[in-house]
Length: 122
Image (cartoon, rainbow, N blue to C red; front, top):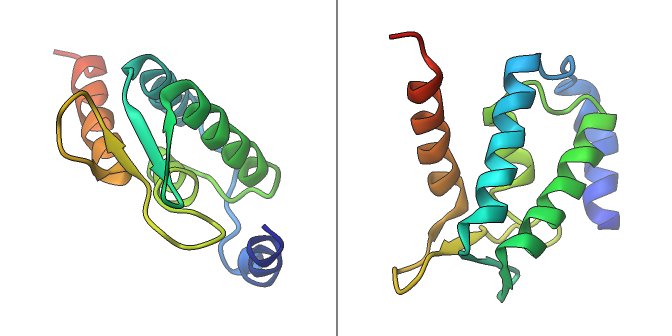
């Protein structure tokens, strides 16, 4: 975590963003809720965790990034908080039921796309 914080202090001025717009905050809340309710397993740093524990971890990372204005969109959230370990750089994986694990970034991007379609005016 110290390495991650040091890296953020160095590069954060280069990537500073405004806080997410209300629509992005709603999307991010949906994604965290989707993970929580999914019943899927979530792998980080080689260990599998239940969905609720994974959502809490990602929420903590998101809160940390928000305080530093490093998340301006849902895509930023996925890339910076929900795709890989800040410590090891290893990608997060999601496994639902008997399915093969998939990258959490792809899993969350797919849900974000479905959510946006469902919310768009017909």
